[in-house]
Every structure is written in structure tokens, then in C-alpha cells.
Length: 439
Ligand SMILES: Cc1ncc(COP(=O)(O)O)c(C=O)c1O
Image 1 (spheres, rainbow, N blue to C red):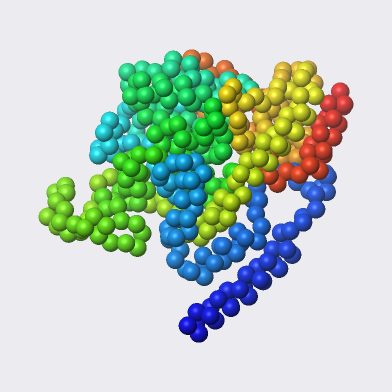
Image 2: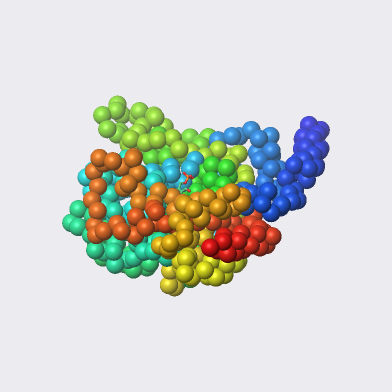
């Protein structure tokens, strides 16, 4: 009793010190135009995230535990999805998602060599799991403005070898996901939504990430909420969740939570593969799996971030609108970012297309902005098949990838994340004006 009171007292002292430290190191950092960076993205946090992280380290559970469970419940409530499984990154989430569909225990599972429809405009680790699972990506183009492929272009890419559709809601802008889902159902295809950049986006009032058989999230600092590193694999299907767990956790057949035994009540009564009868289920493997679990330390940060999510989404939308009104001042030179019809994006960034003109290129403009401390990013891999990693790889392309080339050469994006203040937006506006007044 005495010891537990002492523990609480010491913990309270530590937490008070964390508050003081946070105020000194992280609070009220002044923005100085032209000197301070205007970031594209970043962690938005207060002392509560640090306190939870310290509290988790004092617990010293370390592996997947109570904080992971609390976070998963919060995310499950937010998106109204049954199963949230945490992994160490969005890339791992994508890898586990597709791998889980190769499990022979899953009805209609995917075999090696199958085709998976995806887009050439995007982030590599939306596509890489297709190669990593010995399947063939079928690349289609994306539209300029929305930077998503249309549902029709997905339909046009279908062949008798197609078994799945796997793509991202680019920069938070929802795909025409209802039509894509209807098509997937019609052709009995799996649908994986890479929702890493779109947490909180809606299509026809329903959250992206809730249409597909499986969807993913990333919690890297650039994303809507962060744990430093982290990701999630989400599904409403208990059958798929068991497969997801298996691939995430070494390929195991056993479905006990970390630190638990004999959930199946027949731990020493299984007869599987060519193992002797009764071989410990805990050490029985039914898939060629990985270990991609998250730590409870990371989840403890996510638990606090979840409480801020709705406000973060709101701020992203507000900042996006403000940047939009700046970009629309230069219609001869810049094409604005366009939300997909029937959607309300929870934006990841604001994409700008530099039109062909006699004064400057995308690279000139990007250089000008970066010299003035306004950070920019390209639209990820541009045209992915032009990346060295994809040279000589086995894939199919349907239609032209002309827009992907335009994205590669002429598009970039700037930040709308909640750390972007009105002072920063005024500075962005002035800097654009300076640039366009110079010719
Ligand atoms: C659409 C998309 N998918 C997946 C990822 C990978 O996420 P992570 O960095 O957590 O591996 C990213 C990264 O930003 C992304 O933008």
C-alpha cells in the first residue's frame, strides 16, 4: 500500500516536471517569416503525449499491450470498424493486408501471379506489396487535379487474371470508392484501401477506409495523427483479422494476445501439417509471416492523438481552403487541387500543378519557395514505373501514363497540417505574390 502511494507520488512529480520541460522546449515557438521553416507536415502535440509516453515507459510493458488496446478501441469507434490491428508502419500495414489475402484458410485467397490493379501515381509502398507477394501490378493513370484514377479506368484495367484492387486515396482525396467497390463485388475482387493519407475523409458521407475488405493507416509524423512510426490494418471481417494477425505475428496459427496462453483451450491438442499430434499451438506456423508489431510506447502517444483527431481534420480542411484561395489567384500558371465529387477530403496536403509557360518550371518555383523556407514535396514517386526500383520488374500498364508523367514533371504539394498557422499562410501568400510579380 505504502509502495503504491509512493509510486503515485513519484509519478506525479515526474509528470509535473514533464509539463515544465514541455513549456520550455516545445511551447510557443515563434514563427519568423523567411527565417523559420513553413513545414509540409509535422508532429502536433502537447505535454499529454509526452506524459503518456513516460507513463507507458514506467509501466515497462513495452510490447503490444493496454495502450494498443485502448488506441484500437478509439479508432474502431471513430471509423465504426470492427478490427484494428497495429503494426510498425503504414508500409507494413499494406504488406500485411495483401499477404493476409494469400492465406489458404481465406476463401477465394489470392495465388502468386494474380494481377492487382493499382495506380502509377503514388507512394511506392502502396504498390510494393504486390511485388513482394509475387503478384503482378497493373498500373493505370490518375487524373490531373484530383490525382486519383477514375472508377472507369479501374474497370477498364480488369482482366481475367485480376484478383484485387489496391490503391490510395491520394493526398486525402477520396477515390470514387463506391463505384470501385461495386465493381470489385461484381467481379469478386478484393479491395484494399490505402487510407494512410486520408484518415477522416468521407465519400458520400461515409469514411474512406470503411469501403474495402481491408484498409490501412500510417502514423508517421506526416500523417493525420502520429506515434512517430506506426500503422494499422483494419477490417470488419473476423476471418481476415485472424489472417492479418497471423502474418503480422510470425505466421503463427495461434491467435492468443501477447502475454496470453491457451485461448483456444486446446493448446496441446492440435494436429497440423506434418507436426506430431499435440505440438504446442503457440509454436505452430500456418503462414510465411513477419513480425511487424507495434510497441505500447508508440500506442500510448496515439491514444492522446486520437482525442485531437477531429480538430486536426477540421484544421487541415481550413488550411487547405486558405491555400486554395491563394493558388486560385494565378490561373494562368497554376492548376488548383480538386476534391473528388461527392467527397469531403481530410487533406494530407495541397497539390499544385504548374502549367506549361514561358517564365518558369515547377522546379524553378519549388526552388524559390524552399529558398524562402516554404517547404514543398513532390507527389511522392511521380510516375512510379520511371523509378529505378521498378526497372525490369514484371508489371502491366493499361492505357497511357501521360498524366503520371505530368505529375512527375509539373506537380508539387505544400502543407496544410494543423501546425500551419495564419501567419505562415500570410507569408505563403506574400511569397507567391513576390514570385508572380517578378515577371
Ligand atoms: C499513401 C501512403 N501509403 C503508405 C505510406 C507509408 O507509410 P509509412 O511511412 O508509415 O510506412 C505512405 C507514407 O507516407 C503514404 O503516403
